[in-house]
Length: 213
Image (cartoon, rainbow, N blue to C red; front, side, top):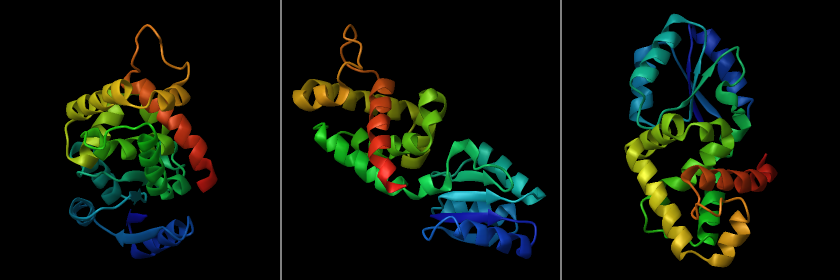
């Protein structure tokens, strides 16, 4: 997990760098002292998180990230506060493993790999596991986040996910669907909504992912 640390002084940055590396052996930090340098790094290469120490440059970067987020925006962590959005640092470490679990689960459901949503749905499902509140507002939070991470529009993410859900429901394994969804879907509606589908994925992946923590 790569983390940019925006600090007021080199000594402050080194202190937080040690704290970040104590989160686990997968964490690697890089200290910068200006918003311009940090923003350029976030645009040009992938970082999983950005830790903002209390200083004017960190606030300037936060404003820029809100206004023009990079294609794959990092999780923003404010030093001295709880990890934002309720995401434990350890959970972010397991995002790649949970993504692999999600891909395996979609195969078990016999979802078609040729559909566009196959490329982003494992990542989307894994994000809802490390940060469950994303499922509370798909159009306002989850779709835009996934769109930025995968170079799409939020509307395209929603349509592609709907196509995969309908295709899986119509052509997937009946046994797998019954075992996976059970009675959690409204029989009057037939196919699950995008949110119902994602929430069920989240439940299964959360149970499977607990052994990773």
